[in-house]
Image (cartoon, rainbow, N blue to C red):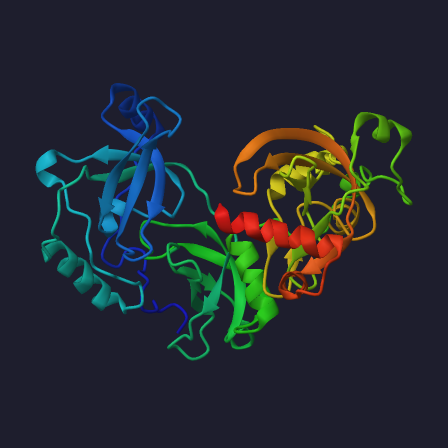
Length: 409
C-alpha cells in the first residue's frame, strides 16, 4: 500500500517528469556571461504559492535591484524561498501581470492543476512586468523547518506530508513510522532533495518541538523560523566577562565625568531588569533646565573583535517574547553591570542639554560618565509622583520638569 502515491505526489515514470530539467552548469555560466540569463535570490509570495519574484542585483550597487516575476509551477521549477537561482527572461510579449489572487497550497492534486489553469486564465489588472522562468539553482538556502504533519488518507502508511509554518515554503514529503505520535504536535523537518518527478520536495523528520498551542512550543517555532540565536552562551564568551565583585576603578574616574551627585532615575515597565537608559532634569542658575539622558556603556565590557563582541553581533538585539527574553549579551551584563539599577554606580554615555522652559535647546554636551541612579521606577510610580502635588522632593520635581518639556516637543 505504501507504494501508492498519496495526493500531492507523483510516481516516477507514471506520466513523465513534472518539472523541466535544470540546465548544465556550463550552459548556465555561458548564459550569465552573455546576458541571456540573470541570477538572483528567489522570494516566494506569502499569498500565492504559484508565484514569486527573483530579485536581481544589490541595493548597494549604482543600478540598485530589479525584479523578475515567476508564475506557474513549471516556471518556478522546484525553487524554494531564498534560493539563489538562474533565470531566463521571457520575451516581452510573454510578460505577466502579478496576480491579486490568494492561492494557498491546501488543495488535492487535481484541484491544484485546476487552480493553475484558472490562474492563467484570469486577467489581473495592472501593468505587465518582466517575467521569466527558473533554469538552474546556484545555491539552496534550505534550513530546518517547523510545521505539522498532515494525517495520511492511507491507513498504516509511513509516507506523509509535512506542512511548514512558513507559508512561503512548499509542503515536504517525509517517511516516518512515528506519525501517530507526531500528529497534533509541532515538529522540525529538513529537505533532502526535490526530484523532477515529485510534486513536493523530499525530506526527513528531525525532532519534536511540543504540542500545538503550547506557549513554550510556539515560542520555539518563532525563534527557529526567524533564525534567532537562542542557545546558551559558549564558554569562550563567558570568559570575556569581568570578574566579580566588579568596582569602578580610579582609571575610570579619571577618564569620565562624575555625575553621581545628580538626581537620575529610570522609568520602565514593571519587572524590567535590563535598564539601559535613565534621565534627569534640574534647574540651572540662569533659569534654564539641564536635561540628561544616560545610556549604559556596554562598550566598556564588550571589547572589539572578542568572542563576546562576535556573539553580540551575531545575535544583534535582545528578543522579548511573552514570557521569555533572549539576551544579546550574558545576563551578568544585561541585567547587572550594564543595567542602570537604583542606588548602584554604573558607567554610561550621557547627553546633557541646556534647554529653555519653552524646550528650546541652548547647548549640547556628550560625555562618558559615572552615574548612580536614585531610583528605578515603573511607569505607574513615575506617574504617581508627577500627579501628587504634595511630592516636593528632588526626584518628583525632576519628573515634572521632564513631563512639562515633553509636552512642548
